[in-house]
Amino acid sequence: MENRSRKCLLAGGSAEIVVKKSRFIATTAPVKSQEEAAGFIERLKKQYWNATHNCYAYIIGEDMLLQRYSDDGEPKGTAGRPMLDVLLAQQLHDTAVVVTRYFGGTLLGTGGLIRAYSQAVSEGLRQSVIQDVRDGFESVITTAYNDLGKVEYCLASHGIAGNDTEYTDQVTIRLLLDEAELEVLTRELAQLTNGKTAIRKIRKVTFAVGEDRRFAL
Image 1 (tube, rainbow, N blue to C red):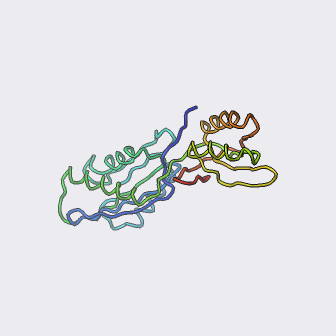
Image 2: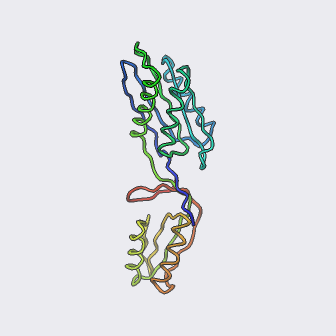
Image 3: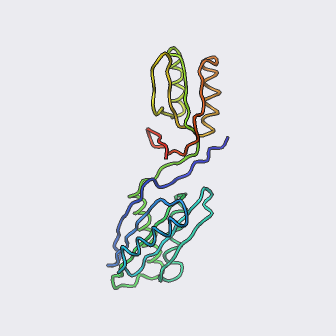
């Protein structure tokens, strides 16, 4: 079963660069719809009402089909499209970015503008929180104490950490798993424990995968 993970912003960020006295301020945000993206862009335009330009780009949807950008008065192809290209290069879903420019008095030329807007977006993303996001299930493993070592070894071999463990007459481990992981663990745990370890789905969830933990969104 294919694991359809995607990279998304969990939290936006902001960064500023200066190129030949022009200030470029990149602000990023997670967005789930075109309406959210429009609202985010409008807020930034109001915040930086006196800026020379407020250019933007965003990508929405699991398949990244909704893509929009604007040069906001900059020469065509020098701002919005390069900004979108940075989002696409990082394979980011459901992400919007606005780059605000305060003109510093020196023309940058086509190449200079493309580089400046692209760099500003890259710096803004470095200040953002980006995570691997998956659709899957909150699941529960129930096992006997004498099989716990086998279960923990199996989970560790797949880089999966339990979210919560309860010790009663048996051991119950709560997990966030995508469908492919659920299938693999069901098969391997049955083999390792001779069918004595049960794993069941509780509910569908969308969750983020960090280096050492997973959490539902």
